[in-house]
Length: 452
Image 1: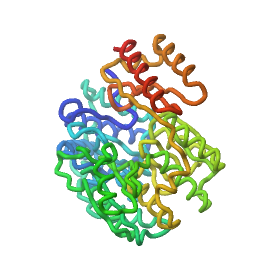
Image 2: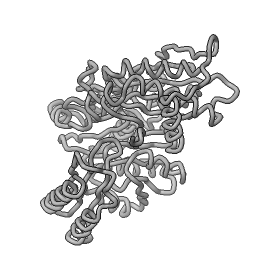
Image 3: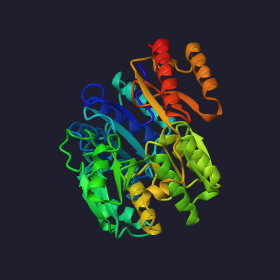
Image 4: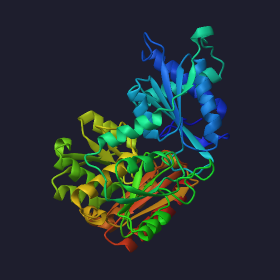
């Protein structure tokens, strides 16, 4: 059996891969592992539990709450809130554990479980491994001491979480958004209430799309993975910009006044220069991943900002930031971490800071984003292959070497197994889009041949 935890928690089709039994068992195991690590020493443990609006989140939330309470953990149930809100509240309320139920940008039938340690930080790989080991032991029949009577966990709704989180977001802004018209696409997800409320309280005129979740429509033709509706709405309403979230609102992509996409690399570039101007870009360094566009790296070099690159996944960006004390990092996909104010990617905060830069400078988002030129980049997802053999396949190694020789110094190639889905991602960057497409197509065929 493969490892349950991927790069962003445990995910799968709800009630098929991710069952109520698994959710309950993992929650019990997490409580035990953190107790053994000394996190609950000398006090009664408390957990914050939140979810996105997926229908399956309702029964999975019940399972998680039951598991935690049966292990003696008191539960604050915050309901539908973004992942970064659960992380923030875990820290702000002094909780010992946070649990978020979401599959982010994945389709509605999927769901996931993500655990946060004290302070709202993602669990280290080693702790996740121990949780999985403990879960498997319990599933095999290993006994565990069950609290009884007053020792069982108590459960209550914490409705104040919404306002507490929104107030935190507003308090972070360097300036108000008065005079800006902003379109928000909530992906019918966890930010459907939070993001419009935060932008409105900050002074923006807000137009919303994708903010009527019904449990079934999350990410359905909207949000950060489907920008067409946002582009149209921004142009139709004459808005200054648009922001799009994913299902759990830990990411943000943007659209300028012309309806053109502004991706995560461009957002990072804009925010890096804004943060440096305020003296907050520690080490004049921003952290990205190996998927960062070459144009972003070149722009940062030109502006005197160092780019440090990590493996793909916001957890690895965060680890690098914490290790060296960097203030800003993120991914092309729109996960942006502002470490002084968040412990994970926060799509609403990112959108607010981007809009604040537009308001403060009086310059349009297109002009601000033009600090970098995106080199053409083609990404092909190759499903139904053995992603575990990407690094060991001699056939693939030869195909990549041939592609790199063809591209020379004007492009690059990246093959990597997805951390959250059963597929291999092929990325090719080149000065010419047609060349990038041709090389990516050949490499995708090579992946199918070698790993299919």
